[in-house]
Length: 183
Image (spheres, rainbow, N blue to C red):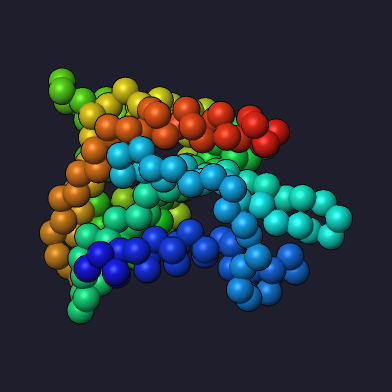
């Protein structure tokens, strides 16, 4: 199981990086320059040459393989830098169906954030940018757990809890490493 999780984490990490400068699917030429974990969250930076220019990027991620084979299922979380600030992307499998309050952040007193975006609740596109991303990232720093209550693409009921312990430190590291690189 650990091998499967590690393999999936590498696959997801390289999904964006597995294209060459021309956009062709090929072995990646990104070189890791930073790699540190905070709880379940990984803060990473890498770089590559594009022509005569050095291209750098930083990101936060977590990959949750919640169902092993034969009914493999997973979801992931990425934070990347954009011109409008951090962008948050959840990778959900098509066919995933969340309950109306099944995509939420909790603290000791109850829910402090939730979404009812159709894309997030149906396993389609689930991306937060601008002010929406800022609000979500702050709630992740303030909360104790990210909760996901849904039926996976195989029809099996799931109730996942991602502890938020370490997320504030991961976010601080992501910001510091991004600033260090001028991102």
